[in-house]
Length: 157
Image 1 (cartoon, helix red, strand yellow):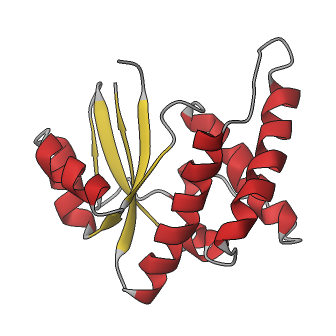
Image 2 (spheres, helix red, strand yellow):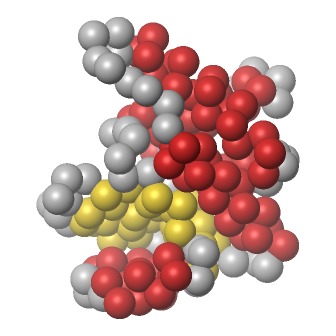
Image 3 (cartoon, helix red, strand yellow):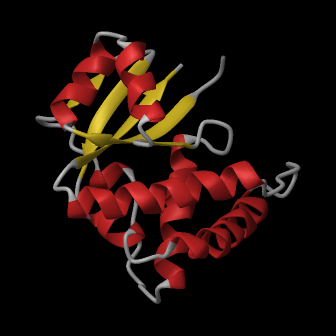
């Protein structure tokens, strides 16, 4: 199956509990409702940093943004050897909510150029699926702020 990496929008405690209980029906419902941005086929967890910094550089932000430093590992998280979930602080949805959906392609292009530079021996091609994942992250980031919901990072092996 491989590594599944997603951002989910909703009530963080419910999402984290669903991951802990392996409640895939709940997670699938979130996806059906348009509340998941799925990056499973595109990167490793560390490569999210390249995505975050691609977005910030496009906005002219010089600050380095890392995923791990924006995750809650103290009160709103679940972590085991084969799955985990952590509440994301507002830095990431605030960053992506500054983009329009049409900007997803440009963000993805910059991100993929960084991936290609980082992994020069790998054949890394930008796909419409990658653009769609970034577009979905922009959309749920906007909704996160407007609807006063939380963004949760989740992963499964």
